[in-house]
Image (cartoon, rainbow, N blue to C red):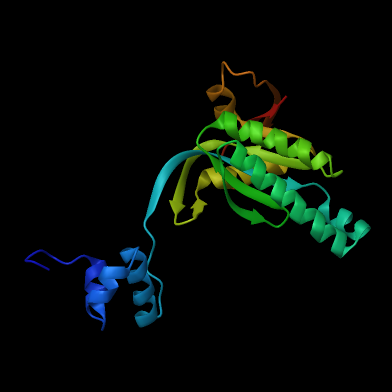
Length: 208
């Protein structure tokens, strides 16, 4: 490679027939190299990860199993699809990103806590129009991004805080409350909670 050391992508691709054509026409050479490496070795290459500060939103439908039994499988499937579509619309409108669905809930990330809280409140209101109750948890912290997924303590914290919420509640960490000082958002203290997997109690606040 003109006297310089070949990159991993170049080393993988250049060892295969048609390498010149691949370089001419491939739009994403790293993705192409990953696919070839997986084909040859049978193992997908590890994706690079990065840690970023984000506000995490985890939602859950309250008593969804009982609701599904009451309305029947077909009606519940249609209702759940409509709910997830509404959630994706709300997340997008508030500048967030849906990472994945979690059964009848959703995991999403936002660049700022106010966006996450406002989105959670909208999701609650949208769900009520379908006679559904949503509870949610919103902390802010570092998450590890790997490809299209996220992981880390903040993700677990969001799920634990959500688990403390009642139907219709948006529970947040103290960090979220402190970061949105000066906004129109208001919070009511809900005390300290023991959260599984965390050594110390966490103060939680309901977005009013």
